[in-house]
Amino acid sequence: MSPIKKVSDEVFVAENGLVLVDLAQIEFLKTQAARNPRHRARLCAHKHGQDRIHEMLIALTQDVYIRPHKHLNKSESFHVIAGSAIVVYFDDAGAIAEVVHVGDIASGRPFYFRNDDGRYHTQVITSPFLVFHEATNGPFSRADTLFAPWSPEETNLEAVRAFLESLKRRAAPNQEAR
Image (cartoon, rainbow, N blue to C red):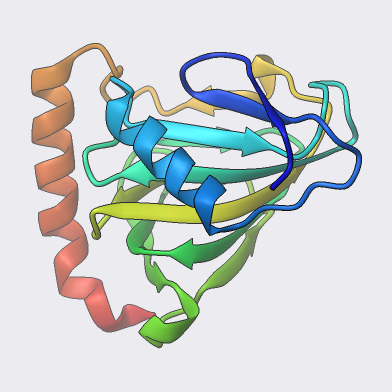
C-alpha cells in the first residue's frame, strides 16, 4: 500500500508519513527474506536512524540465525503477525534462563511481548516464516547492541548450525513453560 524505498537487500523504508501495510507487502517481505543470504527483510515505518521511535515489520525464514544479543538502555516490543518462534533468554554466562513459545493470535500462544530487562536473547523460528511488528526506542546505534561472547558469529556457519541444533534441544523440554 505505502510506497517503499530499498535501502539494502534486507531493509526497505516506507516513504509516506501515513504508513499503510497490506498482505501484498507482507508477502513481499517474505519473498525478500527468502532471497536474502541472511534470511531476513524489514520494512521500516520510521524514516531515519535518529528517529525517537523505531517501528519495523520484519520477516524471517526458519533458516535465519539471530545471534544472541542484548540492548543497552532500550526496550522492544514484539507482536507476531504470522508464524511461530521460540524466544530464548539467557543469563550472562549463556545458560538458558527462560523459554517463551510465541505465535500469531490464532496459535493460542503469546503473540505479544515487551522486553526491557536487558537480557541476552534470540529467536528460533519454528515455522517457514515469522512475520512480526517490532517497536523500540531510537536513535539507532550499533554500540547499543551487545552480542553474547559465548555465541558464534554469523560467518561461522558450522558453529551456527551446531549452536542452533543445541539450542533447539535445550529449549524443547521447556515447550509448555509459557
